[in-house]
Length: 344
Image 1 (spheres, one colour):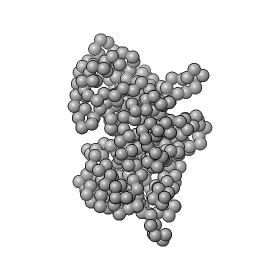
Image 2: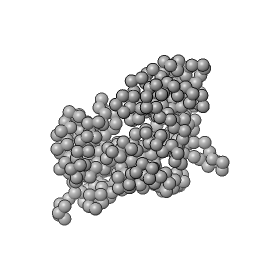
Image 3: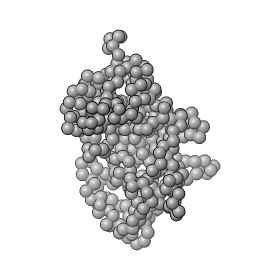
Image 4: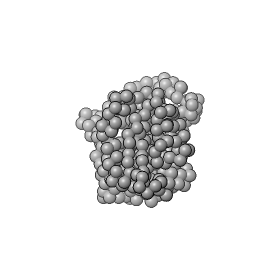
């Protein structure tokens, strides 16, 4: 790269023709990223994506030094399958990809809960690769207590269910993406039948113990590569305002409250994430630091207190493909990483 030529980054998100015309004004949440890249001497251009223009986007992205993408696994009726092929092609041509789909496959799907279940953030996670396995094994696992079933890919609680026994062959189920306290009692065989078509094309289900301390909210740790750049909490309070609702909290509808990376209340969690859990995950899955996503997050629920009465934390999800909102510290750290990644 010539010294007097500014590095160029494509900033990608999913949108329609109207979003293409509006450009950045169609996604103001990403404005801090554009501004942070400008502050470090780079230029950034908006690139609006949808599958029908994948070839045009591929050509355009090939002309950048780097690409940062905010494209959910499921959105506007599309998956990321076509877009991931675009990113792989562009990456193979020498363009730096901030969150490479190969790495997202390793840490940004629910498989990571199973693959890292023995690490410090882990829990009694099961994985079902065939519907027959789910039917044979899940009823016995359910006898240990309420469980949460999750598809391998997804976002926004789509396809996530809390399941608990309420009688012989009967379960109470609760959808996370609805984000209310409504439940339904159904027969267990009837409930399991809805997953019969979920196992094709690499589909599988992850089964995790339900954490009753979800009523205390969720904690999200944001990272740029292997460094924590902030935290957020998401409360269940709007659900708890309904009398008797505490037993039926699943999805969390409240807005996130942001905190900086040095917030005292998360010092222990930060130390574990940076000093133990992420390095352990990297070693286990073979992901060097240079390959970690440019911006990603780990969602935690509070587990049972340990013998000393201290909080424990259970990983419930890693998001690596579309991280918004994010703390103010994230964009400058992301820009510095992006510049360093294309100049080394």
